[in-house]
Image (cartoon, rainbow, N blue to C red; front, side, top):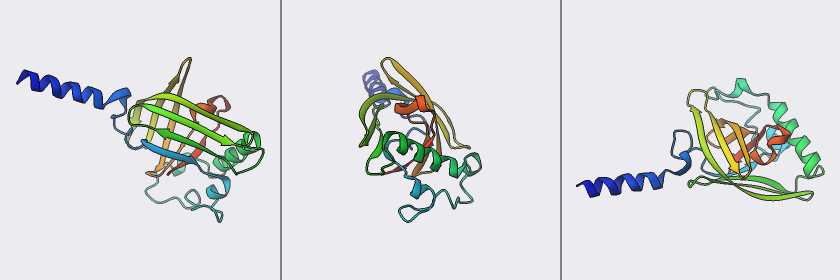
Length: 169
């Protein structure tokens, strides 16, 4: 009986690395793609998620829709020379690894991080996540707009202090 209890505890420890099983963390698992300015402003390429917040969107009062679109435009002007041909992707893995992939004509990178949940506010739908890649350690706040949309300052461009929006792929 003690052997079974030990094996069960060991399996649970292995299945929950880096705090990724904490409440809120499961919602991050997956691949997220940068939302482009025309998508954010409800243009023909997007779904106008920011232009038409729902009654259930508790984070809608906490953000400025135009600011996120402007942030994205500025980023594209700076690292993509204004082109929208490339993309930025975040991949949160269940095992606590995070990939940040930037693939623009003027900026390309693929970084591997470790991520862990610092805190989760279920009412505000806000997570605080620590991302580490020796010697860097970045703590970022992630706001869930809905289950398929998040806003954050990505760890790979934290120095720019630019909040961007990503949609689940």
